[in-house]
Length: 405
Image 1 (cartoon, one colour):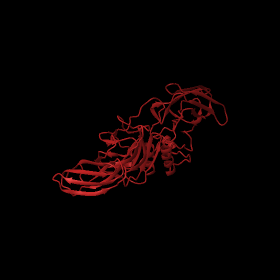
Image 2: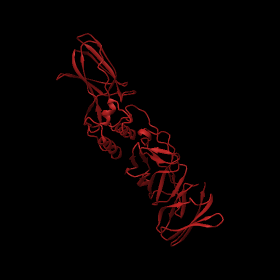
Image 3: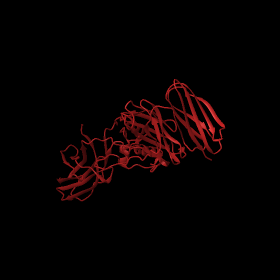
Image 4: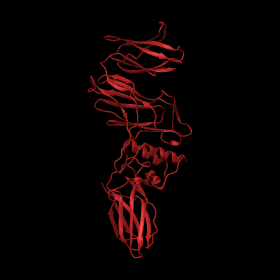
């Protein structure tokens, strides 16, 4: 990798000595965070305007030092062979908040946000950050950004001030200069969806609490050898997604004035999946949320502790299968059914006393289907849902739907 220059944060810069020679030392930190020092970087001290350059390498604690520096004007900078480009969705939300006047950026955050390098932070920078998060597109400024710093050595103990650097696009410190871990986004798998080899099915990511969202960045990891995610939908329009390898990334952002309001039990996203031929007896898959997944609420600030659930995927012998969500339901509910072969298919729903409350023909094609059932006029109680498929073979299956007030 070619060496890309950037200026790192100097958490402390000490100038000592006489008028003829001075010692300069400091500690290189990431994003002005004293917990994340940067070892193994090359720090350069250049005499201005066209003088010599002296270098040293930061130690395991990020320290550097230059001794016997003569009086004169200098520029302090650094270089590294570390890879950058480790950023998270919160960086995009912070740029959104800045563009909406909801937050301020520190000087190094501003430079990290200015990924096109034009000295401004605009919507184009936000688009570049989102394209990088979705598709891995590089930034025009390269992998690192920097604050340059010029100062004069005159034998006094004046401190030139702080400098800082960051991986381009990283405003929140997702980049890992030293070993640390990020917790995975918590998702419960307290329901199941049955599938057989080569079967299509859908998974709903559901919120178990009321949410008011201004932005969402969701990264799903799945074992592509067993299950593939073929497409995705979000709870509202104007979203983007990409599926690559064993990962799906989805992003949406709205406005602080008109957040997306979701009640508990609402679908946040729907994943359209297909089991592979290797998905056989005993197989079970949990689709997990990547640790860079993020939801933003008011002022585009990160929501922590959101309660989300997505079904586990379990193997089942091909047959007519029925489920619904939510169950119990108050108003409408989504009926999910898998039809093992083509044939005439009908749906009938009966109250527990045998009264027919709903009847309709269903899609006659083999595969996984969904249909919305309006239960708002039903009395509270248990209802028997029956589906019958008349193909080469006859299939019949029943399911209980619970209606509450």
